[in-house]
Length: 201
Image 1 (cartoon, rainbow, N blue to C red):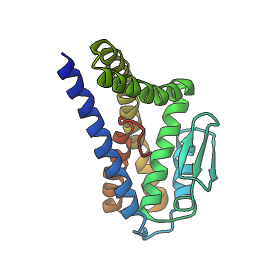
Image 2: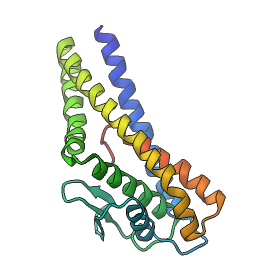
Image 3: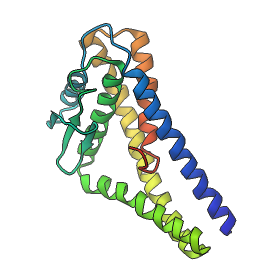
Image 4: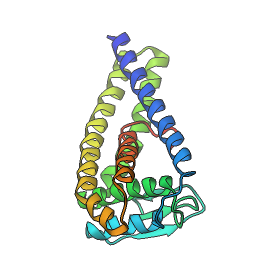
């Protein structure tokens, strides 16, 4: 049983590494591609929020782009805020979807807790591996699976929000079908990355 628990944990770590490397690489490449129209990360984030009746601020930051659930604000860095690159649009859409879903859920504390929970449960699993303690491993994996189920449910809701909103964005900014196809594929990659452990985010 200890071997099975170890394999499950290692597979989850592998999933996390793969998705986070893919996400970082994808955004880096897409930030070098300019959109034909002048849509910026700020504009697309504000449009998504407005279309879903979510009234929160989108501000500029010197740090990396992220949604801050504690302050309930989307912070976009220089690469995303006034930039019309494909990467800026994709990342801003993803962050707006995250903010919309969390605000619809009406309990931001649960999302904050889930983020810290991954880190804590991973640390517990590592302790179990270090001391070869199957009980400690089991506790860590149980909490990790509970958090994973919660995050999977929420990521599915973010995909639904995207599907309900993208046509309005397409019409508003006259985006091409091929642009929408690329944006959809890349945005889903970032949403799936939410299921991974916070290593390089």
